[in-house]
Length: 254
Image (cartoon, rainbow, N blue to C red; front, top):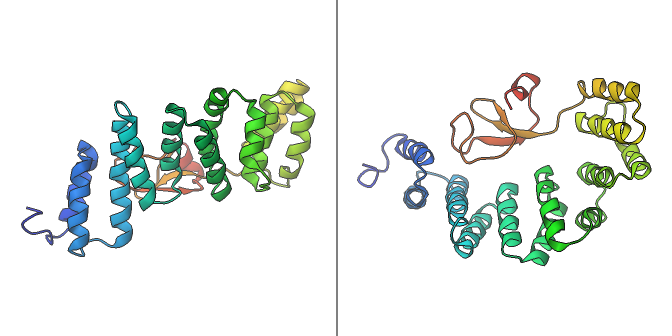
């Protein structure tokens, strides 16, 4: 029906929803090319939908052909440059293929361009494979960055190394009048590991309940939150996730 008359109202959107539930990603590439050529979708939607198809194919290919998977994830990144979920998969592929220096350099660049907190999930694996100290790798990744995410990462590295005095010194600049929930919970870890002072631990735990939440993936349609990005949200909507602050009620859905 789409091939015969692609202008039928909402037929492209309907097919995309079906494809997202059946994982027929090659078909998404085909119909997106046709829909764009017929001016049914704009360039932004065309690039995003094709990049998602390439990303999903890369995830499938990585189970058996890492070279093909790498080619597909690079196509995805070419259409949606710097998108953290794609970059994470690419770095994971580099680590799996033992291209460790390339992974290290790419992670540093990605952090410099957009210090997305989910990049931190790659650090332990990369430090183990490189056989270097976790804190040393963090220092390389952060470089001279002084944004909040970099400060938090430095504190986390010091906590991991049980360098409590260093962690306390590093976290001072994050302890403003209304520290975030994340910063309060880091103080819980510092007090627990350093002083074991129950009163201080409980005070920071209590304070964390009123701290500002970090951004998270929120479905633009259902308004439900989820920790990790997926091409189809947990609520079942294709390409609906946005990185933003959740409301208190919706955060409970994570």
